[in-house]
Image (cartoon, rainbow, N blue to C red; front, side, top):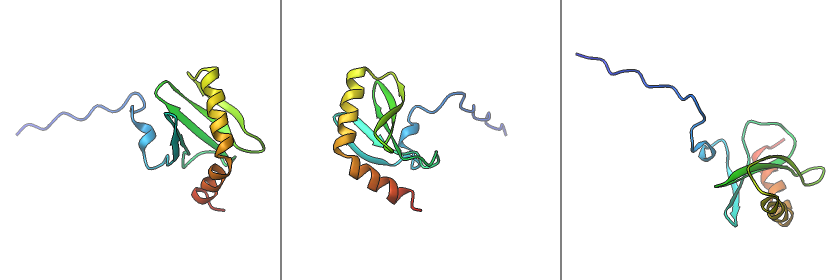
Length: 100
């Protein structure tokens, strides 16, 4: 009886890593997904993903871009406007997801 070959471990991040239970989606709008990572720093922030890239925005003390990966200035401006419109919702979702 032959044993199967062992599985090859990932050498890169799995392509669909943003759909794990550890990164709950708060909402989607205009092709962007707004979400949190469950095990990350305590400062209030939101991650935003679309097909072309990803960004991280601080929500406090004011809305501010923290990181950007492949999003254009126009996309970042649009995302910031969406965050401003949903600021209360995002902060409420953060408090619910990270109690205490």
